[in-house]
Figure 1 (cartoon, rainbow, N blue to C red):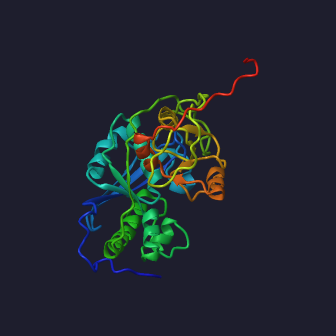
Figure 2: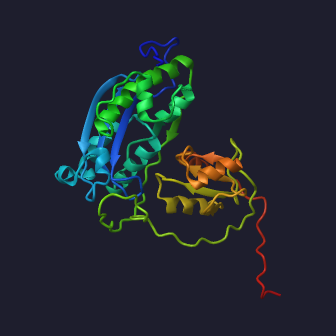
Figure 3: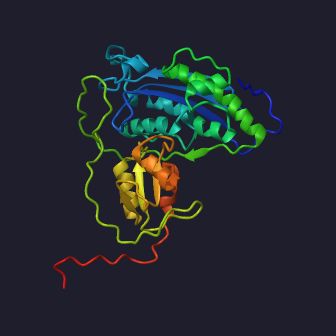
Length: 335
């Protein structure tokens, strides 16, 4: 096992590093867009990763609790727990002015952002840091990217796996030496922008008998047929260049922004939203590029560029105009 000296760094602390962190873990009713948080924990850390305090709460999801065999929280336990709007202010106090840190941060952030949107409150988070991405930047010799492997690497003992408070503690203890190693070696922290979800559409959630991943859109808008893109496909996206109208974009996995709204913005910017990945796909947008979904597997086989959601939404602000407009093919009845 490799141990790093997390008390000292060989160089002065980087001035560009954040001044504080909020290490977060949430347990949920599932992994889909209409799933809810059942518990949340936050460890607040200072600029050098030292623990300042911690906080934990149960949350009544107002629905089936989902995989009880994983998080251990039954309907009886959650019945008297506060609703998310009742703890939103306490959570905000602990997140404000700090970088949100989580293991697979895209997931934790997406669940938190949706809960805030349902409560009609803006989440006070501007940036997040994924400890999976940081471990890759540090090139840690891990067998996989599970939290237990990161913990074992730094000698952190897990006491209650899948309990939000203990998972947050373990991550906080593993993050501190990771942060010091990054500072010592001059590693750029993989910080990503967090854009709070402010648009939400409510609809009744169908009760579930036991746990199963949601296959419905739940509180998300129903899909609809989109008009054909008026611009020709200019080819694949190139790193460090803007998106161009006509590019064929596919999405895979969970997104922090309502998927339909994200696709709407892409279409409005002049992009072609595709439902699958082919050799013509310009880029794939996903928050989990290492997953084995059919789209990510095809993207890897075709060499299709992959972008994380926050990077994609940033590029959407300034899409380059198309070089020409596609000429529609005449219908058989046209003269």
